[in-house]
Image 1 (cartoon, rainbow, N blue to C red):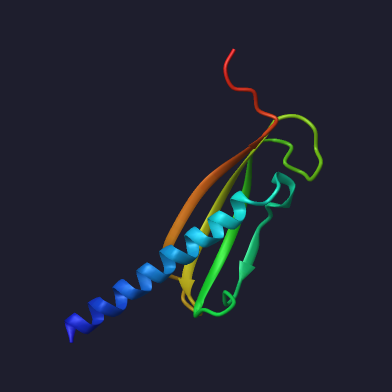
Image 2: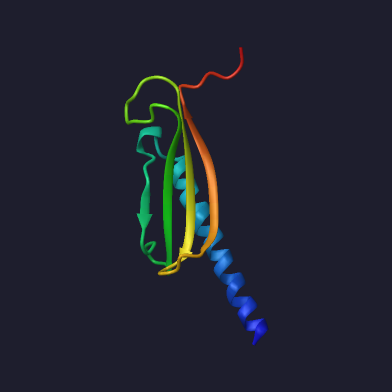
Length: 101
């Protein structure tokens, strides 16, 4: 029925949000040089695939590179085998950036 379908979709969304948040917490605890793109297919213990995409937006983001740089990290969660993204979270990490005057 429609009610059961809604319950299952809600459970899927809640699980996907929680997994995405967990992965973002892991990203925030990594050193800048250790934040790399990683696919988890499936994510250990769950029926979801998680991808962590990293894009260098500014500077030289290579490991150990000097100077300022900025990475955009996107975590996307899908049901295992599906192409539909259930949840996508984005954060930014900066290295050697001076804020203010």
